[in-house]
Image (cartoon, rainbow, N blue to C red):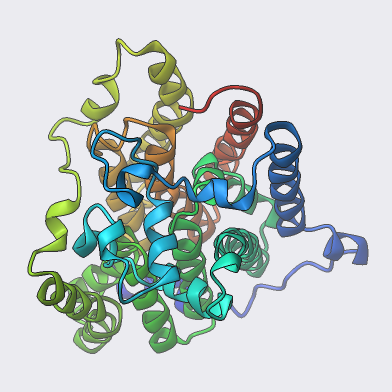
Length: 382
C-alpha cells in the first residue's frame, strides 16, 4: 500500500468541486427519507400490533424473575437495565462482564433520561433513530465531497440490520454513527479527534474495531509509526482498559461471552438449511448480498484497486460476516446487526475509489428494509 494512495479520507482533492444543487434537493435528502421511513415503520407497528416503547426492550422474565424456564427476551433488555441503574444492574443480566463491555449506549441513554426510568424506553429508541439518520447524513456529505450522489447513503440507513437494531434497542446504530463521524473527521483532516470518536465506537460495540484496525495496519505498513501509535492509543487502548476494569469488577473475562467464529465461510448460515422459515430469509438478506460484496472485492483485486485502507477495512468486515457463528445466524436480528459494518465498509471503498458500480450494487442493502418491515408488521419475525 503506497502512502500517497491510502489515506484519501485524510485529504481533499483541491480539484474537486461539490456540485451546485437546487434548493429543493438540499431539503429532500437521503437522511430525511430514511427518517420518514423509520417513523412510518414504528408508527405502523404501534397501530397494527399495538406495541408500546417498552415492548422494543424485549424484556425476558427469565432474568427479571430469575426463572430459568421462562422466556429469555433479547439483548436490548440488558442495556435497559444498565441505563436504569448502571451500578446495580448485574442481577438482571445474563453475562454482566460481557454486557457491560458495551457501555456507551446505556450510559448515554441514562444521561438523557435524567434518572427518570419511565423515559428510558423512549430514549433507547430515540438515540437509535437519531443515530441512523445522522449516520446517513454524514455519509451523504462524504459522498457529496467526492462529487458523488448522496443517495448512495440509503444503503447504510435502510439496511435491515439497522432497522432490526432500532426495533430491538441495540447498540449498533450509535456505534456506526460514531464510525461515520470518525470518517467525516478524517476527511476534515482531524485524525486525532477521529481516533477518539472511534475509541467511543469500539466501547459501544467491539466490532467497530475493524475500522481503526485497518488504519493502524496501513500506517504500520507505511512505517508511519506516530500515526499508528495515535490510533492505537486513542481508538483501542480505552477499550482494553475498560475490559480490564470490567474483568476486575465481575471477576471474569467478558470476552468469553462472545460466540465463537466458524472455520468455514457461511458454515453458520448453512447450519440452518433444514429450518426453511429461517434459512431462505437468511439467503435473501445475508447470503446473496454478501456474495455480491465478495465478488466486487475480488474484482477490485484483479483491477489493482485493493492497495488502500478502504479495501482492507472491507476485507476485515467480509471475514467477520462470512465466518459468523451459527449462534449469530440463528436469527435475522443477530445476523443483521453484526453486518452493518460490512455495508458501511463496502460504501466506504466505493466512495474512496469513486467506483459507481460498487455504490450502485450496494443499494441491494437498501432493498432489505422493505422485506424486514413487512415481516415485522405482518409476519412473525425470525
